[in-house]
Amino acid sequence: MDANRRASGAMFGLAYGDALGAATEFLSMKQIRRRFGDDGPAELDGSPALVTDDTQMAIAVGLALLDALANPPFTPELVTPMWRRRFVDWLNSPDNTRAPGQTCIRACRGLEAGKPWVKATQAGSKGCGANMRVAPVGLAPGLTDETRAGASQLQAAMTHGHPTGLAASELTAFAVRWLADGTAPADLPAALRDRCHAQRAVYHERWLGDLWRRPGMTDPATFISRGWDECLVVLDRLDAALASPDRSSDPCEATGAGWIAEEALATGLLCFLLFPDEPVAAIRRGAASSGDSDSIACLAGAFAGAHLGMDAWPGGWAGRIEYAGDLARIGAAWD
Image (cartoon, one colour):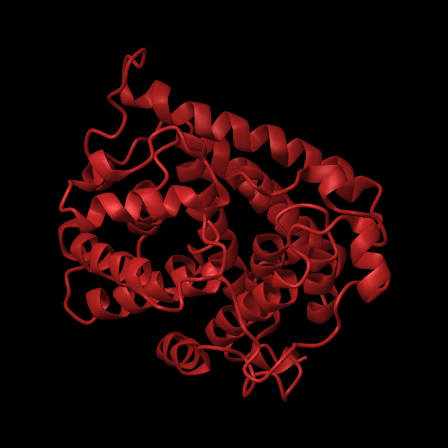
């Protein structure tokens, strides 16, 4: 299979998964099966096929990154106000009607009011909004590992200040990057586990500032290690699910419902790894789940597209998905 245009494949893939999952979010498995069959929705609905806040915010992250990378050097001081502006624009968009997460709404209101992001962020939240939008940081070319890690954590931290939201976002970004670089899907869980161990005590102060300072926290390494430890727990569940793979059951039963960051990562990965060479089947599995179906399918689509490239998706979908122009712009810049 042609693996060209992997950035486009990932950007459009996350939108395709989001659109399929939007139709099933908040439905039980019984309701999903009754309406769509055992395998979930098979086709994009509408023209354009509408997405949710997951894709909207991924585009916000990606467009700000394009602006920042066009004005080197790429630094937190450069990209932070760009992300702030894009997040506030999303907050006030008339299209921000897709059941957005309240953590993002509250944090973005603080950003709009001019608060420093470390004061605007929701410090105790590790919701999946931290990593559903991070794929562009994984796709952006030319970043060192340290910069990619810091940037992926910063974009999460601006709304979700919990250390697990930061760690899960970094893992999501690196999974996308590694797949785009040709890592075999089967090697991904072990690589992510190694990353957890290697980064367990690494706090990116240049990117995160004093985010770690809160009651009961003694030092930055203690703060960030909690996030990596929680990610390791859910990677254990992913390994157990892959040891006895079940393509037909609700993936949320194995790795979690995906409402929180580490479970969104693990369940999105599970859907992809159950169907590593069948991208539509992967996002259908994500959509046919009892949890945060749009975010799970969104992440599965990003992984599948980064692995297989744009040509792996049905040819007619690109012209029907909402925000196709923005997705194409980001993808083409980094293909």
